[in-house]
Structure formats: structure tokens, C-alpha cells
Length: 394
Picture 1: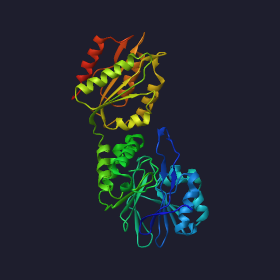
Picture 2: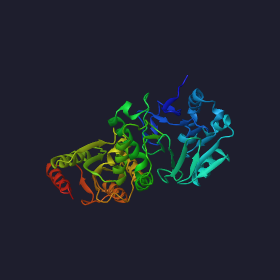
Picture 3: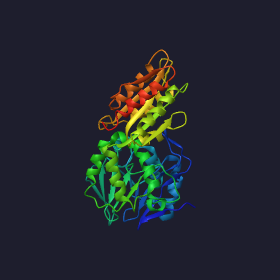
Picture 4: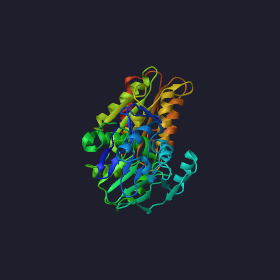
């Protein structure tokens, strides 16, 4: 039998654990994920979120350990996406009189599009719902990361049910941050932020401002572990990430055909090392783009290299840049330095295309595109290192 987990008195985690999830919309989840749902036992039993459709059985079994699912009176749907709302039909079949609380208007319209017309109770920021001794307060968090997103706060428990914010794609037999350890949870939260939330950072800033007046003792996200001992740390970290202020840190990303672009990449790494800038090198043949994006979040300098192949850049580089462009906040990256580079035979199209995408993402390109024909030589590599070293500290 699957068991519910007590979060606080009369509040239970009843979600699903997806141990085998390895790819979430192009983002590698090598530690799996969870689809968190929370049951509040009060005068009017309330379920906060559901789970992915395939995990409805887990959800219902865990609820059943605490209460007959038919007694649920409210289902709070903080987000329409199916990893959050997918078990709503199964819950409504067992609890046909339950009302579905969701954001007005996007939550109600989105849920109706997915699951048809039901008893929706649309709410806006500042609206409340009394479920007994507790009052739930709702705050819309538009575009963190869909238009319908909202968070729910329980006053008696001082719990913020934070939806996608503060989450991690991370499956564990433990359910709390202090059981896993802060470094691991922060690393997973950083990857989650970089690959899902980063393009909406200005909306995160607004959402954090809207939550400032709440007395938050615990943050219960929709994915990963619950924050109970390190609430201050994750709040402060989200403030830093959402500011988009980079560290003095460089990453060099490349693919290569006959090692010339690889030689350039390694020389660029050396240029940063010589200037005492921490640096990481990523070969797109072996490093996944979602892991690289986690480092982009903190990097002031992003160098991307491709040779010219068939009149354009390498497909692996194109895929990375497409992913980067989709996650780029555009505004807020002022001062971040892009360094496009690469080799060519009879046309500089590869590095030129890299330069065009980096510029479209909002990077400054003080060196233009660094191109070299055919095979590198020691003289040009030395010139390349000098040029790159010259942008440090600008």
C-alpha cells in the first residue's frame, strides 16, 4: 500500500513519484521527478493540485489512506499543465461534488479546454477561501511559467503551495530539503530554474514582491522536495537568479569536425583561466543542452563555436542555440558577453550564424565572430587568446 506523508498536522503529501522520468520537454531529468499534491484535512477537505494522468492511481491510494476521496470538497488547480492537473477527471469521478478552484480567467478556460465544463470557481489575487479553521489565499503568478499560474497560501499552516516556483525535477524517498541536503536540492532547483523559469525572470521578480507580506514557514512546490529548513535560502537564491545578475564565470560550448574549432575552444578556455575567470568547457557531442543551460544562468561570458558544415553551422550547435534562444530573457542580459567562433573552409557561415543567434538572445558581441580558415596554427591561437582575454572585466 502506498502511504501519505504528513507535512504538518492535518496536511499530507499525496502525490506521485516518477522514478523513471528522464526527459521532460527536452530537459534531462536524470534523477526522475515527483508530481506533488497536498491534502488538507479541515471542515471542508481540500486537495491542492493533482498529478500526471498516469499517476492518478498513486494519488488516489495515498488520499484513501487519510480520507475517503468522495469527501473532498475543493480541488485547487494552481496550474493547467497536465503534470499538475492530469488527475482531475479521476478525482471528480470519485468526488463529483468537488469544486475546482483555479485562476481567473486563464485557469478556468484552460481546464475547460482540457477536461470540459465542470464546477470551476475562478479566483484572482487576494481572493480567499475558508475551508474551516483555515483560510486559503490565492495569488496569481502570471507567466511563472504559464498565464494561468497561481500559488496558494494556508494561513494556519503558514505553507505556501508554490506550484512550479521553487521546484526541482528530483525523485527521492525523502520529502524535505533537510533530509536530502541543501547542496543537492539547490543544484536541482538551479537546473529547474534555468531550463523552465529563466525566460520569465521579470515575472518572478513581480511574484516575489507579491508574496512579501506572507509569513511563510514552509514552501511546498509541485515538483521535488518541500522546503522547511531552508526557506530563506531558496527565497534569497530566487531573488538572485531572477535578477539575472551573472557571476564572473565563463562557459565555452562547441562542436567540431576536424578539431580546428575544438582547438579554438580550448584556447578560449585558457584565455579565461589566465585571467582567473572560472571556466567550463562543453562538447555538444557528449554534454546535454539542458545541463549547459544550467551553467548559462550564472555565466557572464558564453562562447559558442561551430565550423561551417553544408553552408551553415553544425546541427548540434543549431539545436543548442535554438534551445538557448527559447530560454533567453532577451531583456536583462545586458552586459553578458557572447563570443561566437569557429573554423571554415570556403565560407564563414557557421560562426556567422552563431553570432546572429547570440546577438538575437541579447548578448554583447565585442569581438564579432572569431573565424579561422582551415587548420589552426600557433600564431593565430596566440592571437585568439589575447583577443578573448581582452574582453574580461569589461
